[in-house]
Amino acid sequence: MLLVRVSILSRVVKLNQLLQGNLAQISSIELAARRCERRADIINQLGEEVKELNQIVQEKDEELSRMEDIANRQNAKQAGDIRQLEAELRKLNQLLQEKGRFEKQIRMLKAQVSGMVSDMDQQKEKYEEIQGMIYNQNANNLYHDSP
Image (cartoon, rainbow, N blue to C red; front, side):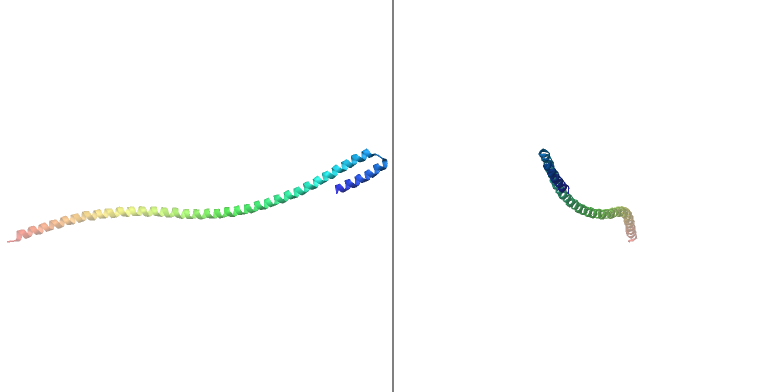
């Protein structure tokens, strides 16, 4: 729009100055008009480049958004996996505690059984000793009672 106005304005001024016969002024006005046209072309080119860059930025933003979504899903999955592993770890710790309690009970029972076996061995020795004494007594009685 600016370009059209400058072009029209330069033509009007050019015609006016031609009528007045001032060619030097006409040249400088034409030169200024050409500069304005070049600037307008540059501005248009820059506008196109800005549009292209905006499109690239939008595409990169969309790609980044997709990547963030993927990362968030992966993080959520990993968080779920971590929660599951933590639950399994709690179960394992509980089982280890139970194992420790059972091992303690087993040691206590082994000690009790060992004590009971020792007591039974002592009782067996006493019994065998008494049996031996009874056998000897009976043998003595038989020996003395025989004619």
